[in-house]
Image 1 (cartoon, rainbow over the protein chains, first blue to last red):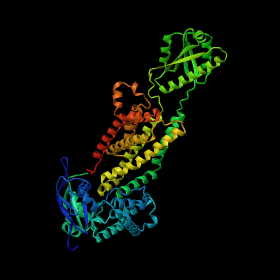
Image 2: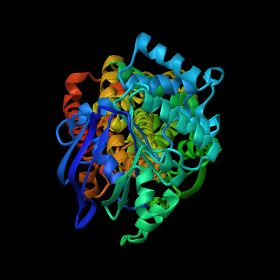
Image 3: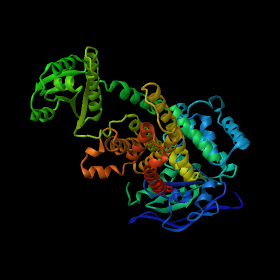
Image 4: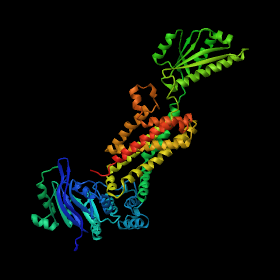
Length: 248
Length: 368
């Protein structure tokens, strides 16, 4: 990651619901090919922040560019350049693997040979080819999540947003899931990920910690552990979250 | 276009994978046709009848015997004064009163004709028409019987009087009402549920983050149900013609045209509901209570609007299915053309445009 190309740039971004500052004055940058961990307790404002970056929610104030596009004016262009996978499971359970791939490929504007090639490629990579005509509902959770991630980047977006992608999955499967994330990052896709699992925070290149709508810390996991003089990200998180005023 | 195509195909998968949806989609209209057509048959047996016999002669007595022996009627009592007629109806279970005037036999044999009055309780118009028809049949049969042994021409003239609802509005066939009902059910319920399901599953979020135009989402949701509704209309019409022997007197093209407008109207209602409802159950409940009930109550299909209190009559005007029901009835039963129903079509079209505009506007592009 030597020449740092900025793909997300956020300055003083704020979102207010009534009198409540869900996100208050956050600023950060994310670079191309980076795996950026976006951590925080429930209710710290993570989801609100992600929604603003994805063009789902209009910021109250501040400036932000995603993939070079303004979050106020160019939401449609942003949408064409990002992938998204949410904490809620996001494939159609009553459709087969193949049908899901084709549908999402289709709405991301892939068609004909390109869609065909991506589909084959994806099925092969996930070793799902023998199961392509099975309903997604019948797949194990780990497979579903890998499939959901692969579909979220089927159109080779600049950035993929993952909102707690590994909820409820066992450590081994989570590990495999992160292999996919690394692979995507190696291809130059920037990964913006929120998580509850602190072991996953260790996998990120840099992490930010949100507390009460503000960013309380932002650095590499190694630096953060040094700074707080603790052995694990778990302890870093604990020290920071303890100061939180807000509860859920 | 590619997006829309992928989307519409996906929606069809949803429909055909879900056996419950399918059952509702096709089972419901068929069940209703069968139910209305056969179970709720309009053949009436042993209806209570009262005879007011001023004549009390041999002809009237013979006729009364014939009526009493018919399967359709049970002779409740024989009365002799006008005031007793009203009282009999008010008691409730009397559906029909036959009145033989003074000198019935005399008029018949000396002047060649005599009148018999048939008074029906037309607050239930279907029953009233059926029963008067039965009574007229019996009288006609009797007339033919006595004609054989008489030298001159004899005719008994039944004078039908419908009490409480003289014009018998609402007595026409149930099929137009059923069409309105089925269309609403399929369109409103299915569209709202399918959109709310995406909200519940979290897939709506993915769609909103994708570069898909929200308009494409709406159109893709609506298209499959539009076609399925037309298919359903065809099924209902075919069954009505083949199974129930109802003939369609007007233009089929016009019927399909107006139905398309009504389907659009129903689809936009479904869209509106999907904006309000947070869960599939809520969507279902709002569709049923908010759409089906007014249709049943206010379209004139089950209850004649003319019999309602004025405020309710006014309310009935904002129910789209009322207008659709009037139009379909006119086309199917009266066989009228566009010239006669353009006003209703116009009203329905405006309602549709209004609802479409509101629902497009309300459809949330951003989740916040």
